[in-house]
Length: 297
Image: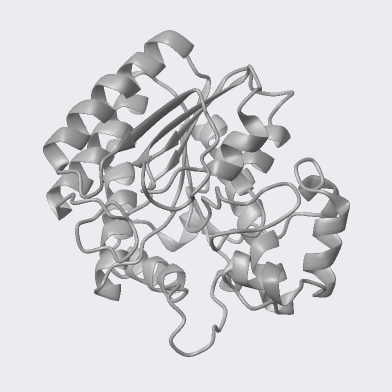
């Protein structure tokens, strides 16, 4: 039995001063093992997705650009990363991690990818630090196996790419709670979109999310849930523009994970965003999410 998926390819070098906290993946894995939150035998390398799997969502032209490094400067700016062979390899591994996490959830109740949640990627392009849309690809991979999939996107930013790709698919329910006046500028409708004001307080956020998520479960009756547990909702995040305290984020996770467990819904967790002013806090918040999941499941 494997509970979590991690690849050494998740961490790549970025230019000095780059705002994306690429270090967090390895740091999180090391702390999980150091604090015995998860045993080493329960962490596996997911391998890498193949071209055919990526093309269930993305265009061949975009895939080939990413593989061969033919992105224009403008496309790289939109993506947020400079292209490198390791960026491509990292992205293929992260997709595999999310697919494996969903399958582990179906097998044992819980699966965790110690990366993933790249919900801004569109079929023909990457944006907002998202190369390939691992969530949409995982859903497509499970089409023959799972009739109803609930995506619980609690990253501070709307998953515009995921909504664009899956928004009209009857077997997928997309639930998003995000800041309305924040990136991405253009939003695409999902099943439920809760758009909060900037710097929403935890009390208001939690009340609305709890009520709406319980309704989603009751009305949709999912056979699998994918939780994008972004920690950019924290008050000290540089980009999230929410005002949840550390305890608020923990309560969000306890509620969401606990609800899935109570309703006996297999749960896959991916990390999503996190850009705290204190880098160690980003890792600590992700650590708390995984710890909560391991305690409940």
